[in-house]
Length: 167
Image (cartoon, rainbow, N blue to C red; front, side):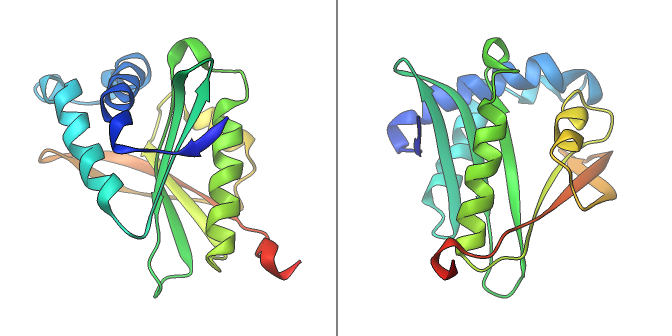
């Protein structure tokens, strides 16, 4: 079941994100900053994300446990929304959870009259194949800065359908 994230979910979400980073992304960043990525560090980021008005924060819950999380944002001035994070518990990957969260985000941003959605990740990360399978209309590259270190990033741009309110 997909539902809106709540402040009471922060610890479970921070743990999920921490575990996903440890499994899929940590080897791509400098060893000198890996100690930053603690559960408390992710919890402080989540607190800010959940307080934003123009934020999309959803969880995928199964059997009472949070196994997926997607977060995004948009601005009224920009036609492209950004999915800033998509995480699935490592033991629950390859079960359609990430795909369901992407589809939910696409519907949400489409209803906000956005024409596209982009998600940035580290180039060469294990998740690159997942995002490619979801048929982006284009890919972009840029540098992503994490704690003063620069890494090559890749953005996957997805076209959004017409808002469901207009159909």
